[in-house]
Image (cartoon, rainbow, N blue to C red; front, side, top):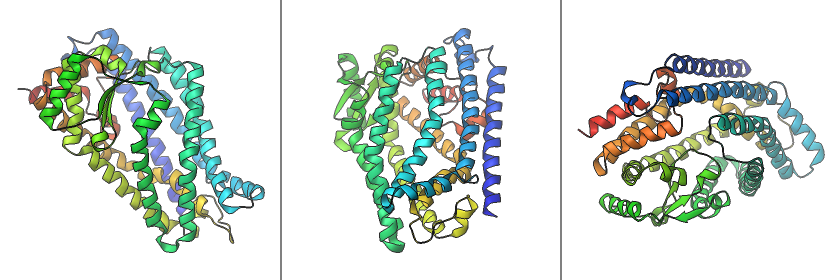
Length: 416
């Protein structure tokens, strides 16, 4: 019965995502040859068509990738791939902890290898074709090696700790595992700005006095303190521009991509930053973190129950082994199969995110210049080849930011 339920949800997930992608492709193509009136004076027809073509190509790649992911999932579960790996590794490793860690590592390695061709195609064909990619093959390989080493450095102790509490703390293991997960996430947030991010990019203090002065005054108006303003050499990898906050408390820092600074003027940068400050002032970041950790607890509680049910394993193509731990099997099955049953949450998460974006926009319009934020967004839409005409249904299901036309209309209304 559980097998049929899994198959039904998987087919629904795949077919729904393919249908949404096809809607997006069709809608973007239908509006390819006319710039929306709100943007006609600022974005050329050539740029609009480029954005449409870029969106369509991304959708096509995403459709193929989703099909491959579904095939790999079926291979691991119903076709016995995970069962085969577990038995073979049991012949190689006598130590149960090493066997289970090797099983988790093997699954993630296979999934990484399957996803690698898509990453390569996306970077060196799709992004290259539209003028965004600046990564060399050498840098791509170096980044992959660094990511692998970081995954081993942080992922191995995390997995070992969770497996240990699953096997040694009885029915209370769920709470211990959740506590470990919370601590791990806080550790990553703490280490990211000073240890992890500098492994991939160079960060230098912002030197522009006009921008620094504007940001300083904005911080005073908003009652916000940061440890520093930094510029990241984002142009080393991509032509896309961005800015973000990172760190905790007084150790928070603001990071600008050099590509963003090269495109926007001081007033526009201030407005973009005011938008990001809006997320903090309205506690969007804190709420999302609390919600994420709360959902993690729910998932661990569900996993705690499912891990003791034989039908859970057998329904996903695995026969649990008697006389030895099956904790790694339970973790893997849960985390690769759970997205199949929770895809329906995406529209709700997207709606909440869009609501936060509107609120942050209104904050920016009040603390800086709404017109400058509009100007900055139009430039970013143009530079990043973001479609101005997304399909409404696709946008409602996926998009974390409001469609361009609605967002600009909302900002113009806020500045009146």
